[in-house]
Image (tube, rainbow, N blue to C red; front, side, top):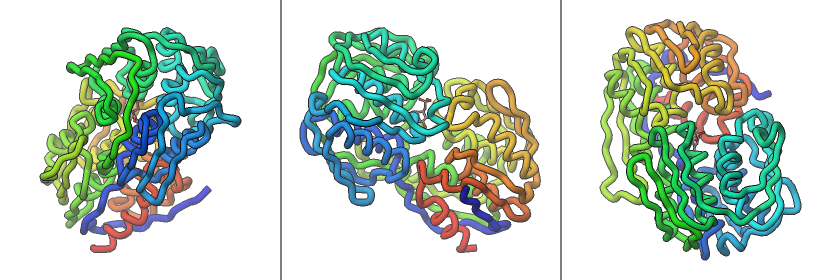
Amino acid sequence: MDTRVLHLTGAAVKGEVDIPGDKSISHRAVMFGAVANGKTTIKNFLPGADCLSTIACFSRLGVRIEREGSSVTVYGEGFDGLKEPSALLDTGNSGTTTRLMLGILAGLPFHSVLAGDESIAKRPMSRVVNPLREMGAAIDGRNQGEYTPLAVRGQSMKGIRYNLPVASAQVKSAILLAGLQADGDTIVIEPAKTRDHTENMIQQFGGTVEVDGNFVKLSGPQSLQAADIMVPGDISSAAFFLAAGAIAKKSSIILKNVGLNPTRTGIIEVLKQMGANMEIIPHEHQTFEPAGDIVISSSDLKGVEIGGDLIPRLIDEIPIIALLATQAAGKTVIKDAAELKVKETNRINTVAEELSKLGAKIIPTDDGMIIEGKAALHGADVQSYGDHRIGMMLAVASLIADGEVRLSDAGAVEVSYPQFFEHLYALAQHS
Ligand code: S3P
């Protein structure tokens, strides 16, 4: 396992960083390009391991896809252009690939099998499999379809009206993707608004979808047309450097090209509430997903309470918010976030365990955690457990920890941010 020894203690972070493409949007751009008719071009695609898994799966389904760095071209021939794969579809570490592809494969007239790594094998799939079965899908897997490997025998599908039991954009998206091939109306009602990149993408690819608050409706079947997609930077990746800028001493950094879709900007609201010195400069020319630059500098932070509808808008940022909270005066309470238990790792446990090793005062709860600040952090042996966001959070912690942070399984960052360490070292060098 690759270990990184980080001795960045006391470094200031200065300069600017171009934030790499959004993971959620990159996945969807490839998927929609693959099922649309014509040549789709994608710029600023994220060449992280998860999105490469999506490309590999669609290539295996017979779609011609060319990639040069962060430029991707997808030659789609509609849903009918996808062909029965002769081998397993390997979704790697990617929950988005696994769950959204189920929605696409459920309605296609062939057999396919999806499986990923050890972490994917533990992640709940019945949240997607059950509504798809109600739409007519034939899907089987371990424990009645709860776990991968999942075998799909495509069927003709019918629309559904579905109240999502959990606020999950992956489940919503899988149902909408199936709905595009199904007969009749598909309606998804969310308990709290989750990221709406699938809805945006349907419109970009010439489809029709109606959105009214937490209510999403489309009529199937629909055929989609190729599009040119510019992917904004990933706010979930930017979050690590937002935190670095706020907690490292004498720091000031500019994060360029950060996606600012309101369903993803919970971290900005939390940073504001904590009292961060931060300025947001929206881009003059907005594309289908809003973006802008963010300037952030060393800040005196205070603890906050986070819960309710805000949680889906920052679900992936909770590990780095926990680190921010260790440097904020007073108590931070994170609640209503039980979903953290079913991410790449059980993030309630991994965040609490690893940050405690560095000296944080953090108590895991059933649906979140309670963090007491300000804590003086120190060096220690820590690990990512193969979870990219845990790895990046611990690496940022090394800026303020007194002593070396030895991070094992550091390569996990490849999943969403292959240039993470390069960017971290470049910013920290300016001190
Ligand atoms: C994602 C949705 C979220 C998020 C994941 C990406 C997406 O998962 O945690 O990193 O692209 O739709 P859930 O839908 O399971 O909450």
